[in-house]
Length: 224
Image 1 (cartoon, rainbow, N blue to C red):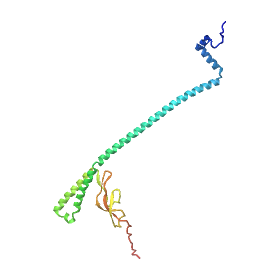
Image 2: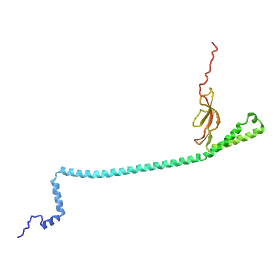
Image 3: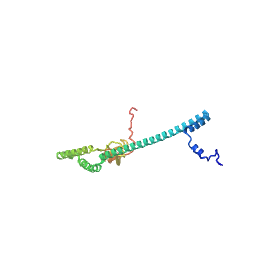
Image 4: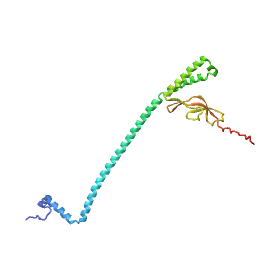
């Protein structure tokens, strides 16, 4: 007598049959499940699936947009740095061109000073002597040629006499009592100053008017 229960889960035939359920049968089961749901539930599930898909799609687009923005920022920084390097290189090149002869220019100022001292040492009487006058003309031409050559290399004399004192270009050596001009006006130039391009090469040594008010003119009424 057999003890095998026809409804037993351990029946080999039943186990084997459950594993080999046809796809059509599985589809029928899914259809039965769908039929058991109302339309609202099905719509809710569909909406949830769509929302999940859209969220995943949006997350991917957002990530790509952040990467693009990061790349743009890096590109702009690289371009700005390249531009700064180019500007610095151009500035260094210009400075080298303008100021490479600075030391030589300072040495040449001594030559200019000596020529000017030679000219200033002559009195008016000496200038009338024919031999000295000819020599004087040659020295003046030499000085003018030197200053002209220096100007070609952007080495120029600083305007001083009659100008307002500027500590950036002038150095005051003494004060002169003079109430006919405004205080701080340069009245005398002891030694000429020079600039090379826009940079100070040597300040002008000057004497300036001493502070004080201008004299007030006294008007006498002669009709009284």
